[in-house]
Image (cartoon, rainbow, N blue to C red; front, side, top):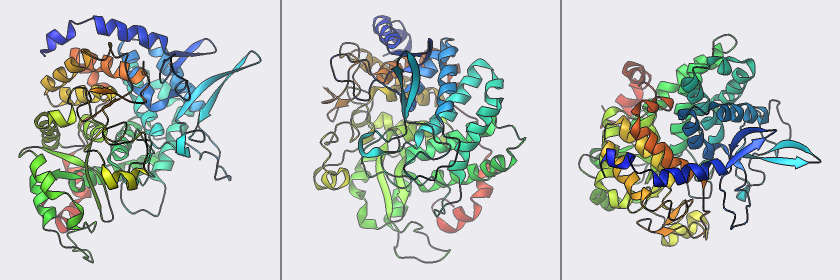
Length: 481
């Protein structure tokens, strides 16, 4: 579909805006967020709450349309929910955390916000991505409104600092990445992503960049210095050790295992037989590549995770060459990754015995459903942003055209099932807000590429990355050198 043809279709867009307006949450007379889903035909469960990660695409749309009050209110109210004191009780949320979600509670004519830090979630999963998305969104608000004073307020400076203290704290781990449990991000059920999953490393990188821009030095010199130290290390680590293309695959294929000392080439002790080489050999295009889903001790998760790869392109974590290779992979493997409803959250699905062991026989995460390679329309905005970033807008136009033909008619489902995304998700809510806003935001980014500045960054100076990783690159990975 041509871009101009895409932008002239107003019917689905108008229906999307009507549904979005209906989802807005009010607190003490002010708009403060959006419901996860406004599906009156199904029990609400926790879909009547505002999730921090879900609200991001809605917030960006509101900023683009000049409705900045709802985003400011959201940022102010969620900051108030952030614990500011150290907790002795291990069952209480730690200082600096931003909740996964909140809802408005009315009691005897009084309203208050009830935060959920994971205490009420399935499997009691604590969110790691909420605080990262919060910082990214705060920066987007500042850029859209030029209201730097909000970020410079003492309570906001303290809020950013507390988040950075969690992320940059001394720990047992000795990598520049974040060590996190399973289910701590968009994929909030057991899917074998514990360790250093790509999605959280990319959001961590973007949050560090955003915090670095907004922290004023007075009283924050130690945090600023820590960010300046971590950023090039994190960037170099992801670019080198997470990258997979046919040349890199050839190098890994010939790795030796059980190596010791500083001269080890197989740094993470990846066992050759643990990787699906022959499947990857068939699947990887000659000029395509992507960032692996996870890297750690004896682990190289070769699944393609969409959010992490697209946000790596958008945030300039991936190099220009890598960004183009990621988009080439999406284009060459369109049926696998986009199919009939953009776009797969990951590929391929866990199946058979691997599905049973890794997911714990999760009935919602059966192969090609939900987080196990289901299709999520919210990812359209990231595909559009990455397409604009790499000047490959034909890809986003085609994807939006596919979605436009179905989403409104299907009543904006949360996700789709099947290898090509032809089935409405078995347990998907209708009128899912981030499905609506993912579509609207994708169209806005295509219509006006300048909006990309809300979520994108300039590339880190190459010399900073190369200096920080000089020893690691030369001595650990001869393919890179």
